[in-house]
Image 1 (spheres, rainbow, N blue to C red):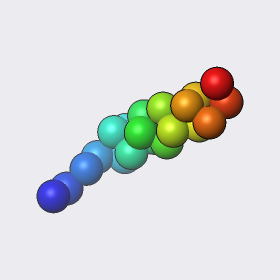
Image 2 (cartoon, one colour):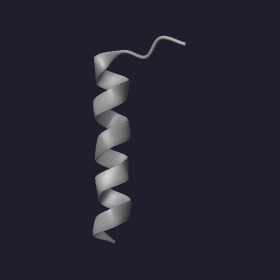
Image 3 (tube, rainbow, N blue to C red):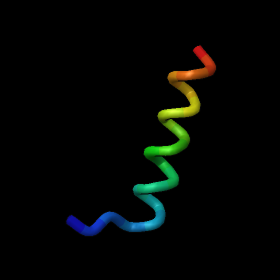
Length: 21
């Protein structure tokens, strides 16, 4: 399964947001 760099960054951003909350 190939994911684009943009999707990967979006995933990381979501992950960090969940941790921040």
